[in-house]
Figure 1: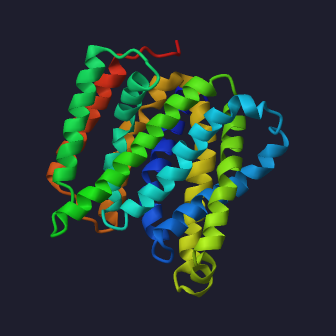
Figure 2: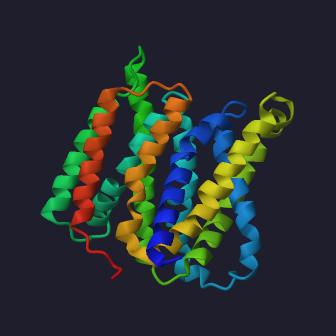
Figure 3: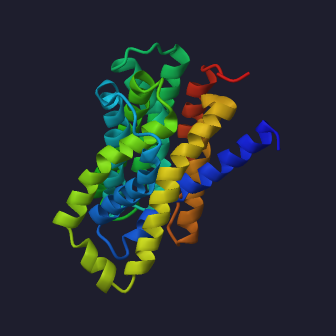
Length: 297
C-alpha cells in the first residue's frame, strides 16, 4: 500500500473516531455524571498508556515539563470535563459542530500569545469562522432555554480554546520530543489527578455497579478513552509524518459531518441553518489552511 492511500485511510478512520467521540460521551452519561465520564476517560486512557512508560521513561522532565502540561492539561484534562458538561444541555451533534472552532483559535493563540505571524487571509478566515460560530450558537437549540444553551455552547468554545493552547504549546516546547513519549508522559501527569478526583469525590463505583446501564456506559467510555484519546493521538502523529500537518488538519472538515450523522441516527434534531453555519465555519478553516504551505513534498 502506498503512502497516499494509507494517509487517506488513516484520515478517514481518525475522522470517524473523533467525530464519534461526542455520541460516546452521551452514551456514557446514561449511567454516569458528566464529571465521572470525563474522569473515567482520562483515567482509563492513562492506565492504557502506562505500559509504554517502560520504554519512554528517560526524559529531561524539568526541560519538557511546561510542554507536557500544555499537552496534558489543556489538550486532554480540561476539555474532557468541559465537553461532557456541555452535553448535559446541548446535543452531541451541536457539540461536534462547535469543535470545528479549534483551528481558528489555534491561529489566534499563536498570534497573540506565541507571537506567530498571521496573514491577512488568515485573519479573514478567522472572522468568517467566528461569524459561522455565532450563527451556529444563535441557531443552536430551538427551545425555551436559549440563554442557558448559549452558556453550554461557550463551554465547548472554551474547550476548543484549550485545544488551541495545547497545539501551540506542543509546537513551541515539545517540537523535538518523540510524539509517543510526549503522549505517554502527558497522560502520566494528568492520570493521577483525574483518578484522585474520580474515586475520591464522585460515586463512580456505585454507578458502575448498581446502575442498569453501568457496564454498557463503561464500555462506551472505555472506547472513548482508549481509541479516541490514547491510540488516536499516536495514529494522528503517524499521519503527520506521512503526509504533513496541512493534510492531517483535514480531519477538521470531516469531524462535524460524522458528529451530525451520529446525532441524526440518535434522533437528535439538526436544523438546516446549523448546517449552513457549519459550512461557513469550514470555509473559514479552508481559508486559514490555504495560506499554509504543506511540509511534505
